[in-house]
Image (cartoon, rainbow, N blue to C red; front, side, top):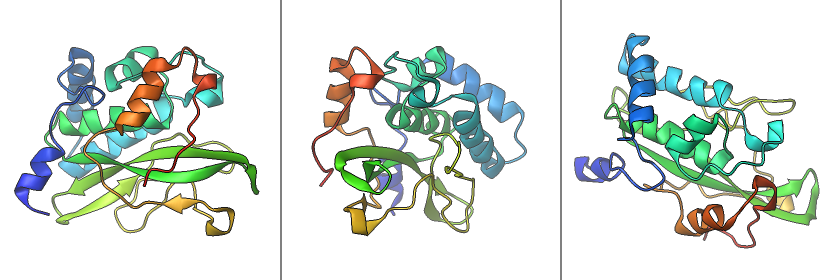
Length: 197
């Protein structure tokens, strides 16, 4: 990818609002604890994964719509947890984007419908390549880890159930997802009825 392309993944957006003072403060704290740029990426990832619970896991109805709100509310769904990690990375000059998966709502049963899962793309300067990290939050049967060698994501896509790993790299949260967040009064009413592509 060219330098110009990487610049796109450093811009502030409505949802990835990395110039917000809350984001800047947390990014500075994490940077202070880090020994290198790669260590900072790991610490930011582990902070979002482990210290910001997924709203469904803790049954929190509040709808965090952008990165700073996830930090303030201390919870968010995968869409906005991805925005928070991207914001923490961009605030320290590390290009980051969002990738998507289409997953079934229920294990081994596509009749329940599908959900759109979001995770992060991160440019690793030392390796001159992009990797994907999933800060959704671990729980029983979900064990995402930081790795630059092989993907250790929250979910393995099962093609037999119609699930899709788009393996894409987007500079911002999809506008359809932003609209759903703005129109939802509770996390538990959030739903999608479309595929990303």
